[in-house]
Length: 457
Image (cartoon, rainbow, N blue to C red; front, top):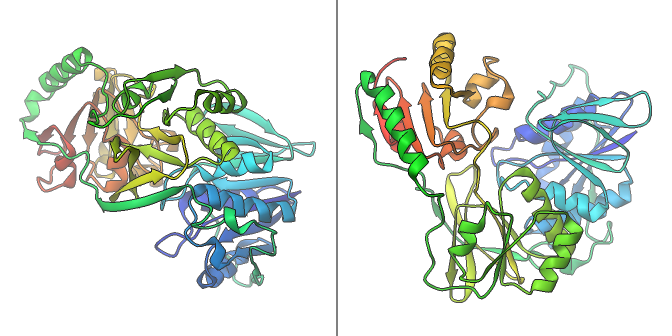
């Protein structure tokens, strides 16, 4: 069985947690021939060479000036050309990287390869036959050869053995994979980053209250949120002619930029691609649930359209759609435009299935988790956790909130013992009312909370 693992070196020089999980999952498949594939400059040779010590028998570095400046579509195209030359049975990827955090390249790549696609995979195991079985948050599914599997951060990458040997990476150019230069790099990228600036979104004015007021604050917050209309994006002064909303969830964002919004059902990529061509719209807006993001990426790959992921704000500027999204682990906001028509964007519409109240525990209350759980149960709330608490083995990965976990937007979010690192804020910043409990009055979490309690739990 041949498996190609697509990876990317992070800004810190290391392998990101999702890609590391994908690599370990591939190494765990019995009798698999594992090949690493990355697109980068020659400076990544040592990085790639070092990873072969863990078990990959082959490593390919796609490196060519023609690949520089690629967005997700151009990246997926270059990778697809290399994968076609390698002819694997399976392709493994991390669900997302921490650099772009779009989760678009894997489904685009699957579309270009004509592969089936399984996302949010937690485990992968061999079967008695020739296939694999994947478990995910959606259940268990068989994966026949010709499937691309996108892994969650569910595997821990092994360490190299003392006497393990390295394999020398092969360097392939655009010509080596018979790639069309017009579809590669900046030339082949239908999206452009126009500007970037520090991310100040999500910050709130915190009112500090006493511990004994907590129950009353939660009750009033729930009442207010239930009476509040569904959130929409800020209305743009300039308007687009016609905009498609794929499903009801992103309709508010669509109405913020157009007075002519047509809602279409999120059916399948074939139907939606035909609908988009027939409607001749200026923009297509998608939700941020896993199904919508997969469909958006597949349609973008099929129609060669620009797609911007996880937008928090849309506007019309000089007659074109300006899309704003967090990048670089949420530390900056990027302003992006599409060179193709219609422009396409997925927008932050997370509502989740976790109920009206989430109580999220941080590493600081690891020794009081029983009390935190009792507190959550008393509210009928869902108990979630920070990444550090999950990494410490105190909570399951399925309950992690943040950049490398889940994004949630409950009416009320109670952060207990959470410091407020940007990785966590990305996952909960669209919550209705945020209440933070932390003994450190200078904890960053209070900058993102509506109410704060300076106290131990």
